[in-house]
Each structure stands twice: as C-alpha cells, then as structure tokens.
Image (cartoon, rainbow, N blue to C red; front, side):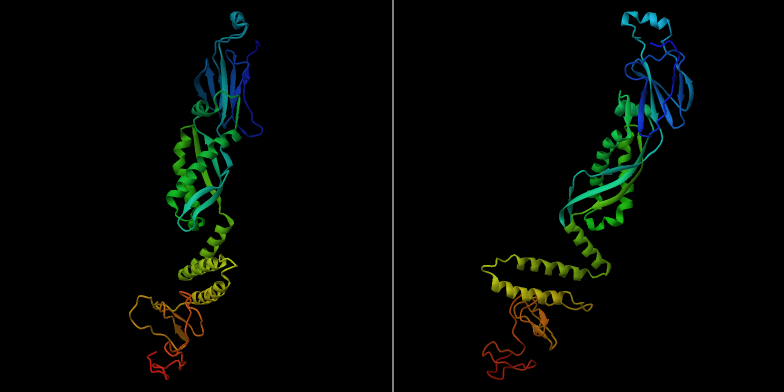
Amino acid sequence: MSQFIEVLEFLDNGGQTVASRIPPADSGEIKYGAQLIVQQNQAAVFVKDGKFLDVFGAGRHTLITENIPILTKLLSLPYNFKSPFRASVYFVALNDFTNLKWGTPEPVLFKDAEFDLVRLRARGTYSVKITEPALFLGKLAGTKGRYTISELEDFLRNKIVSQFFDTLGTNITSVIDLPKVYDEMGVLILNQIKSSFEQYGIELCDLKILAITLPEEVQKAVDERSSMAASGDIDRYAKFKAARAIDKLAGSQNAAGGAAVDMGLGLAVGQMMAGALKPQTQGEARPSASSTEPVKTSAAETVCKKCAAPNPAGAKFCMNCAAKLSPPGYCEQCSAENPAAAKFCMNCGRKL
C-alpha cells in the first residue's frame, strides 16, 4: 500500500464510459485526506465499507477515510497487510448520450385489419442521460469496474422494442396508416416508457422512429392502396381487389381438366376488369339479382338474365357473375334473331 495521498479523477477520452470505479478491484484503500476531482459533466459516488455514503458534484473534494498512512500499514498486519477499511469512488457520466440505436432483431407479427398478419421490422434513435447516479449503480452497473454505453444500449433496446409494439397494437389498426403517425408514435412511446427508465436512474430524453419496414408484397399493396386513396377513388380500389382475386382463382385451375373453363373465365375476367376500372357516373344505380323492378339499359348494353347486371354491348360473358350472355333481340324460345329494339319475336311472337 502506497503511503502517499491520492488525487482521484477520471477523464474519458473515448466518451463511451457511463461509470468507472477508482481505484481498481484489487485495491480499495483510499487514504485519509485523498483529493477527489470531479469534472463538470460528472458525479462521483463515494463508497465506504460497501455503502454509498455521498454523491459529489463538480469540483475538488477531500475524502475522510480510516486509511491513515503508516498507522493503517501497522493495523493491517493481521490482514496480510491488506487494509480492512475499504473505500472507492465511482465516476458517473452525466452528459447526454445521443444518437443511440434501437431496432427489432427479428421481424415481429402484427395483426393488421387490411392485410391480416404482417411481419414488421422497425428501427429508430433515442437519447438518454443518468439523473440518479447512486440508483443507476445500485440497479445496473453494480460492482463492475467499468460500464459502457454499449452495455446500456443492449439493456434499453429491448425495453423500447417491447413498448413500441404494445403501442402500435393499441393505436394502429392497419400499416397503411403508419407513415403519417411516425412523429406521434415516437412521442407516445417516449411518454409511456419514461417511468420504466426512471426506476434505473435514467432519463429518456428523446425517441424517434426512423422506419417501419414491411414485407415486399405488403409494401406493394400499401403503395397501390395509398395511390388510389389519394385520388379519392376507393370504389375503384375495391373493384381492383375483386378482379385480382378472380384472376388469381383463374390461374389456380389445373391445366389438365380446366383448359376450357380457364378460357371462358379468362374472357369474363378481362371484361370484368374493363368494366370495373371504368369511371362511374356519380349516383349510378347498381341492379341486384333480387330486384323485381325492370332494369333500364341503353341500346349499347346487354343485361345478364342470371344476375340482371348490365354489360357492354358485344360482351359474351357477364362481368358480374361470368354467365354466358345472349345478344339483344335473341329469342330463347325459337332462337330467332330480332332487332335490338324489338319487344316481341318476329318468328313466334314470344315477348322478348
């Protein structure tokens, strides 16, 4: 044990140390009258006989211990010249640790109202600082000789990710709404997780969401949905989805037994797509199969006798139910062809 009075200070050139102990673990024999130098952005926690006795702010301080040169040397003889009067100082950084990263290590499932289950990744930044050095040492740093910001990041990241998905599930129903609520979500998570950080003597100063990443196929669907919503044509988007579903069904037919069905269904799907993507006149009535009123159509339209839906002139299959269409003026009884405007068959007199 050296007989000289110590001057205790800690300078972190790398800026990565949150807490550091002086002297190292194999000593702990700070002498009576040692000078403690604390920097402006630090706090020093004085530990004596295993207890936190005081927290010192910036400035120079004189430490009072039982380790008196020469006298302690003689008293420590029964302890193999190791002083029983243990004392140490922990220097804790009080500056803001900024631009720390958080993110999901693996994709997380999210129950989406529009796309069902979606696998999401998220990432962002945050800033923290130590506000209660003794509490921080007691709960996190412990007796480590050095505690770095990377170790603290590993601990805090999991808490942020957990809170992020709790908040997401509570406040968002579909990933379509995510881009416009990044800032609001960041503030919400910050307020909800602050108390969790405070119990460790840490203040969460700032939190931002930089990106929420969707699977490629979901991102494509979101882009389509956003584009159509921006134009105000929600009805067109609904028809687009229906047409795409029919197209997918047609593609699933097996090649061996469904060639003819595929051809007919393909024509129907094509006509349905053409009709569905045409702009509709505001207030246009849509006939239903259950309606008892006669359907009014123009001469350029063909009415489906199965579902009563109007179809473009020349259509061979109904764009609503894919049923085969009869041309205008066609008599179902004698198969005679009549002018489109005829009300009775010229051959058999049956009402058309």
